[in-house]
Structures are given as structure tokens and as C-alpha cells.
Length: 164
Image (cartoon, rainbow, N blue to C red; front, side):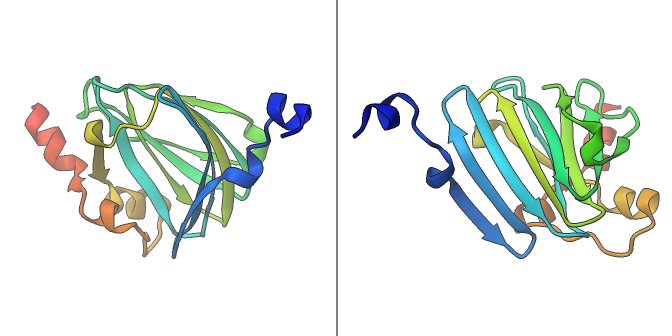
């Protein structure tokens, strides 16, 4: 191994890539405390609504490289609060999603985005919630394409009723 490769290792060629009908996810770097990812999501697909509970909090910082998304967030300290959303495009730059927020994104256009997770991924602490009906209503779309994991997620409404 050359000194350059030893001291300046490249991560691009070592990405773990997962593909499905929605697009792909590349894990560019992962440690116990941080994850760097890049993703392509096809128009009409929703990734989320996900949250890692207090046992493994995770702050996300992301940006849209190309395309456009509707970004959704729900404060999990009070899931009865409104679901917030914002349209995000490349010119909006980097956005922070605090650890207390369940988060997901809907691709309004084919979209490439990059994100950094401050806090490692912990499958055991991750919760998934369905907001498909809400997305259809606020965005005026007929279809929301989901992963099998997200199709099986409990409706956020059930969590809200439990919080009352």
C-alpha cells in the first residue's frame, strides 16, 4: 500500500450499495458513531417515517444534490403535534433533523441526496411509522411507493392515540 493510500484512503470505491425499485442507497462510511450515505430515490417514493429512540439518538444532516423532495418531520416528544413538511431543492443547502424528530422524505422528482448521521444506526432502536394517507392529502398524489418495511409500519395515528 502506498503512503498516499495509507494516509488518504478513498471511500468512493468501497461504498455498500443496496438497490430496489425505489432507487438505491450507498453507505459511503460507517462507524459506531456516524454514517455517511448517498441515495437516489425515484419520483413517487417515500423513505420513512423513521426515528431512533432515546437509546440510540441520531441527528441527520442532509442536502438534495438534484431533484426535489417533500421532507416530513414529527416531534416524537409529542407525536400528537402536527406533521411538518417542507419542499426541499438543491439550492436550500444542508438541513439538520434533530434526534427527537421522526423523519421521512417523498421524492417529488427523481432525487439524489446525501446525508450524514451523527450517531450510528441501531436497528433495534429504530421505529417506523406510516403517514401515507397524510402524504397523499397534503401533496395531492394518488400513489406513495414504499419499501416492505415501511409498508408494514404502524400508522402514526395509532402512536398519537396512545399518547393522548
